[in-house]
Image (cartoon, rainbow, N blue to C red; front, side, top):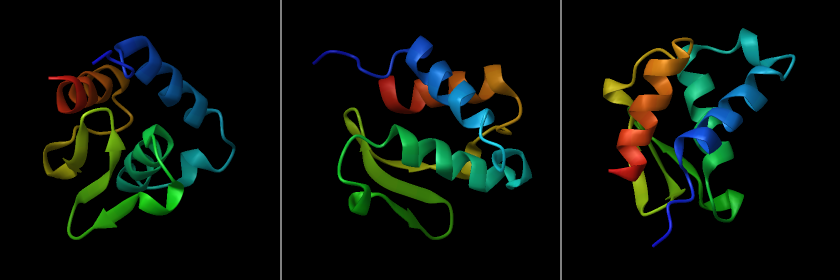
Length: 89
């Protein structure tokens, strides 16, 4: 299976979201949820936030991501490396 979410693509999504005018006003958690909503590869209705801190959708081969150990969204390098580990390894 080809790896669609390689690190440069993950960074492109991150940079795209940071350019949205209202994005900077969101909480760290909401920024991460929006990131995964954008990364989700299927019907938008199939993306879900599950309590307390899990997102469910289609992220390559992964279908659920636990946000409990997520680094701060504002720390770009750590956040992107964490996502790469979550969905590609």
